[in-house]
Length: 115
Image 1 (spheres, rainbow, N blue to C red):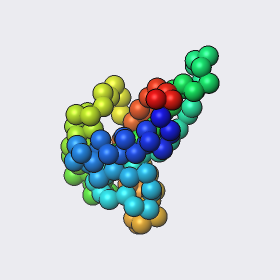
Image 2 (spheres, one colour):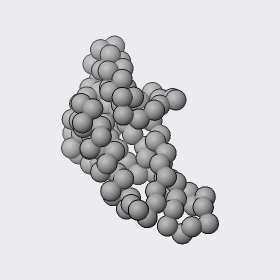
Image 3 (cartoon, one colour):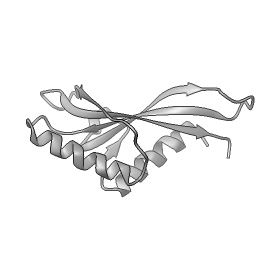
Image 4 (cartoon, rainbow, N blue to C red):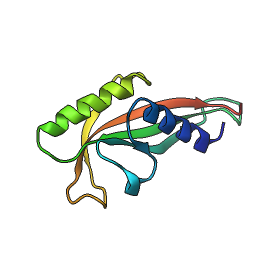
C-alpha cells in the first residue's frame, strides 16, 4: 500500500463516520479533522513493510466551552472507526480562521505493507 492510499483510507473512514476530514489545512471545515503523515519506522527486515504514524487533529471553532462539546462529539465519531488510548488538547492555527482552533491531537499508528 502506498502512503497516499493509507492517508486517503483514513480520510474516507473518518468522513464515513461523520467527520469532515481532509489532509489539506486550507480546506479544514469546523468541526472537522486534519490528517497529516508523520513518523515512518522501519522495524522489519522487509524493505516494503514499515510502521507509519499519522497525526490527526480533531478541530473545533474557538467558541469557548462549547468547543469542548464539539471536540468530545468528534472524538466519539473517531472512536467508532479507530481505537484511541489518548488524545492531547492543543491549539492549531489555520490561515482561514482568525484565532487558533482548539483541537485534540491523536497519533494513529499503522503497519504499511506492499499489498
